Image (cartoon, rainbow, N blue to C red; front, side, top):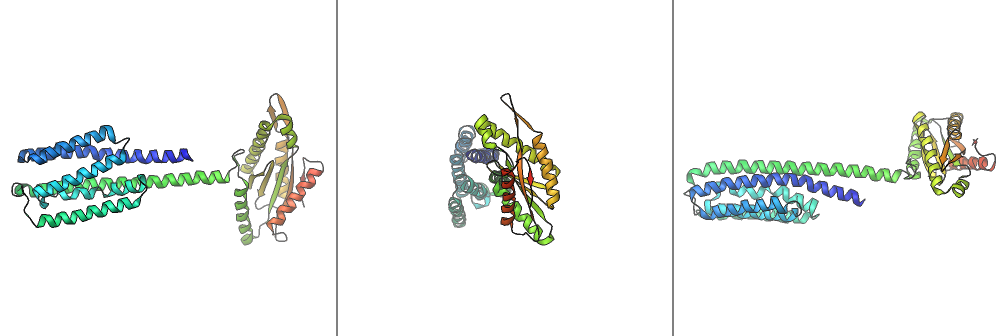
Length: 361
């Protein structure tokens, strides 16, 4: 279970890391363009800040991102927010720099939900971002920015450039977020299937366990209630299994159980039957849509397969036999507990008699 959890976390980080890297490299290019613009316009503070931003993103890409994803995300969020506020303060609202913090909303929620496992962090940061957005808008409307006149001719170009870049960032991050959530959902479904199989499969013999067979018998009873088609239950027990364990050891006993299970599985592929390990050296066969006579014929075929099976263990040739008790679930006998009791009683009769046989009602 720990391995599955580790693989899941690694996959989340790897997929998000790829998307994050693309955004970081795009941010380096974007800030380089801003540096050129502010250099041409002679705004030293923004020139220095964009050099600082490029340096920060290079450090994140080279040293921090892989091992410190949360720290890298926080630094990115702070850089984007400060750069947006600074540009809006100096150039004005019409430059469109205010849109960039909004692009990080998908990243914020992704980190809060899937990495930090605290949704409230995402809500707090997003609400803070939206409030800051409104405050920045009100502040910008109440004054003329320091370099607003200098960028008068570039206002429309900057606005269009920033909104297009921000839209691309936002669209990419939303896609990455949704894609990652889809991967997580697929992983959860796969793990649920694994856990379901673990709960329903006997680990030694790799066939259904008692819990799984109980569910299948319930389904068969529901089918009987609607169609009134009889079915049979066969309880099987390996003859002298304790003697095999005592003589050859438990490792040999495990091989016997596996060998019998393989024979049962092979017959399940031929006939309309379900098989399970009922407990210990006992197996149960659910013979669907089957009369007692047909069930006896199928079980006889299975017994012959077992009689012809030779287990070679440490130079010993071990012969195995099995005794089977069968009971039919039909209109007259439609209590499953009674059917199981009769099958078990028939098995007991066979074990007390000759063994290596089939006993029916």
